[in-house]
Image 1 (cartoon, rainbow, N blue to C red):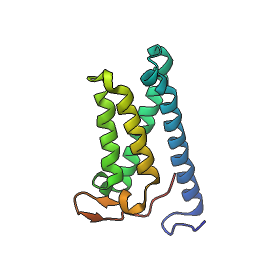
Image 2: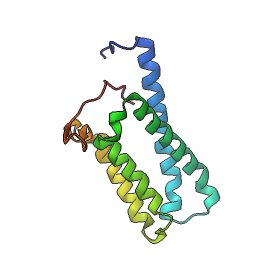
Image 3: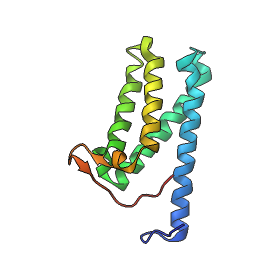
Length: 137
């Protein structure tokens, strides 16, 4: 693995493991909270997972914005903000919560595994804009 020129090897691995751990906890929280969306289980069973998912998601978003404010206009940021809006719509539109939750999951996969040209496309600049080199998580 190539060492990033702006980070020491130790800093790189600390950031990489930190971001990977946050992402893992975020996914775990989403999995745990999904029963509340799909099966209407008692709120006490899924709420701790939901809190985990939302808190780690917020930390990951702040991480990205601090690293590069361009994230807010790149598709990876725009689609993440869209996911937040779709999740928020589950409250006033509970009859659509399963469809909204599934849409958020699909957007997540496209955003995470899509080509860099899509993830880094800026809706403001109308072209691909690469920000600073990122530490993958």
